[in-house]
Image (cartoon, rainbow over all chains, first blue to last red; front, side, top):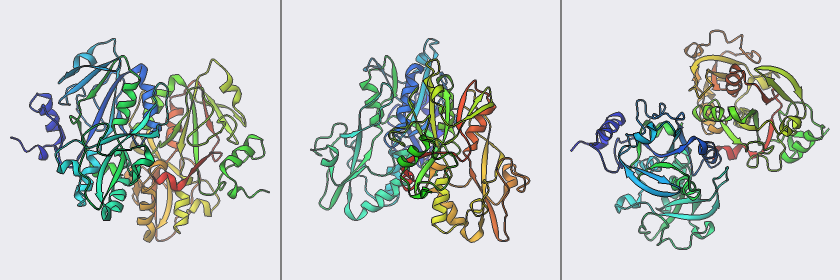
Length: 265
Length: 265
């Protein structure tokens, strides 16, 4: 088995393209940022780009490809957006109609003019937390991060509106300032927490039952800390039931050529 | 004479709208961010928005209004984009065809679907430098900041391409680290320097003859420090000779409701 953590992003993307990596990308290419993918027809792209611009904490845009293009030149030189992610989901009118390992056919269809959006992912700041000795519970417990709907309205844009979704990580109280400071340095991957310690203030009543992902243990002396979550744009998008959309499948991310540390600049 | 520094942004915008402030906004509403304005027909807006997204250091977008809208709800609640700037410039096919104190008529024309872009301005980080005791030479000398063309290519988007324009401030060498650190905290208003001390490395051969603005004195023991400049988007825009565009006149900015300190978050 290759040491996936030590692969270069270009190597990992090539293995994915060849079908040799068909599982989640967590932990691959240590130090490099991974991103969420959203692909939309050009007709919806303006509204979605505006939505991201107006809600940078939950929807931090890393790169937007040219209409019809299959590459992200800034974040993945030589990448093929249609084949470099291990698993894609296709949605029609808000309903998932299939999972694919290659979505070239959709891009190749000349009647579609698809625009690809690369959105920052919390993997980047979790790696910074771990390096600073701050525990990330869902990684310890081998589950998905717990995510919750909130009462925090996003700023609407065109057809897109909705509330922010947040992820929660329980942090020992003595480490909460460092967790806030470290993530605040990384606004391109969600940045500082949106709430510390008062879930009810943002409309969350039951931490044991997240709206997405899995519940995690909150230990004595730990404080629930909430960050804006990349599920927000997907959620808002799906609520508008676009005629057509492609996203990555959860955990199957686009691996970029850009180091997490560079995202702080 | 009113104390312009202590006005609230809403008060200042109202005085501008009433024609009682018809001069540059430098120094007004202390602590609040001011922004650059670019207004374009919808047909060019996608390319320009992509250009800004791809070049966030020289083109840090603060807000994009809805097509046809005359207000920035996030940065200027209740604002009127067409009347709240003391002086506007109108360009047709890349040529300035007039200066105006009110551009309502252009927005009111139903055949135009104008999109307004608010772009971060170095006034915000200069205020942070001054608070930290770091001198800002062109303010001391009462002139415009010196700006230079560089050999640093911007990432193109659609019809827009060109090189970065930088502003230069001479900083005493002992204060250069602080100047870099303070501005790095403010990526929404150009962020960290792009070059420190080696103008020739970015294609600048003669500091005494800036391409825009005025030359300033560089004293013994001072280092020229270069930041990405908000003239970049205007320059790139004008090179494409759009059929129609409105900008603010230099120094006559949009005064926002958002404090400079908040732009660090």
